[in-house]
Each structure stands twice: as C-alpha cells, then as structure tokens.
Image (cartoon, rainbow, N blue to C red):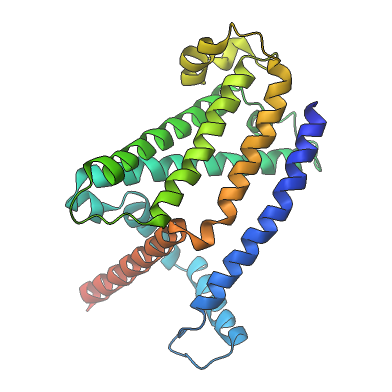
Length: 283
C-alpha cells in the first residue's frame, strides 16, 4: 500500500461514516425540536429551525458573541463550577477535553489546508499553511504530541476514578464504558500509528523529536524489530482514521452528546446571568 492508496482507502471509509454521523446528529436534533423553541411548542419544525437560526445569527452579529465566547472558555472548557467542587474531577475533565479539542482542531486545520487551500489554491508554499500537512514540522508535531498526552492522562484519570477508586455518589453505566472504549481505541491506534511512522522512512529525524513521547520513549522500544515499517505506516494511517470515524458516528447516541449538551446549557446560563448582571448595574 502506498500513500495514494492509503489516502483513498481512508476517504472511502470515512465519508460514508460521516454521513451516518450527520444523520444521527439530525435525529438527536429533531428530538430536541419536539420541545418548545422561543416559547412556541406547537410550531412546525421549519418554524422552530427558523427561530433557532435567528437566535444564532443574532448572537454572532451582536455583543452577545463575546459573552458566548467567554462562557465557553469559563464554563464549558475550564468549568469553574467543577473546579470549585472537586479539583480531581476538574483536572480529569480539563485534561481530557483539552486534548480532544486540540487534536480535533489540528485534524480540521490539516484537512482544510490539504484538501482546500493546497489542493484548490496551491498554497503549499505559504509556510503557515504548508506546515499543517507536515507531521514532523516542529509546531505540528509538538501540538499533536501535547494533545495526545493530555488526552491520554485525562483518560487514565477517568478510568481510575470510574473503575478503581469509585466514589460512592458515582454511577458508571454502559455509556460511560463505551466512552472509555471509544477514546481508548482512538488513543491506542494513534500511538501505534506514531510509533510505526517514526520507525519508517517517512520521517524527518532533525525535527521528529518534537513528538517527544513517540520519538524518545515509544519508538525506540520497537526500532530493532525487522518489520515492514513503511507498509505498516500506511495501514495504521487507515486503521486509526477509520477507528476514529467509527467512534465519531456514535457521538450523537453516547455520553459525548450528554457532555456537549451539558456544556451548551452551562454556556447559555452564564450568558443569561451576565446579561442580568449588566442590566442590574445599568439600572
């Protein structure tokens, strides 16, 4: 398997799975629309969507956008309420969420750079665009490694708390276990893919060290094995990508969606409280 075959195999598997993900997302969203929107429960789906769109656009193109960004940082990402209640629960949340956000953002930027800015506009000569498709570029390698480490440590904390220390008030169900399995599969296949690639010829030794865990700790453990590293690197690229896509399509029906919905609720509440506080001061 060469580079082009591996990429073709990935997209052949990835695109149908993303369509299924969007269908699942719509099913969940349609269920939410059964409730009231803007105080109207008997409105049609189209009317509710229109009302939501007006609210979203009205927020984006208004001073409320800053309040929403602030609420995302303070309540959804940092989660100050959880920090005040339990430092270890907060640390678990912060590490896992930060790692997920960083890695998914890097994947999105890489796809945008490779499939749009470079493929259609031929901007590979622009350093801050071309670097996102080079896995051994210092910035790309370092950020990917930091994201993977944060996500791994966060998952370990989660497993220890859920399945070993088990606080009395904590209830672990099938959705929690699936989240562990799903994130674990993504991380395991990702680390294996990095080990294989760093032992292949598709690596720049001068800058590969920015992937500090893979280059200095993991890859040397297997470097002496007589394996077809170049061939395995292509296979692991496909396997890791498809496994990640499979986990993504389960998001609408898993604990991930509960976490997203909870974050949205916290953000909306924080914006409303900020607006009430501002109105009170003005009065």
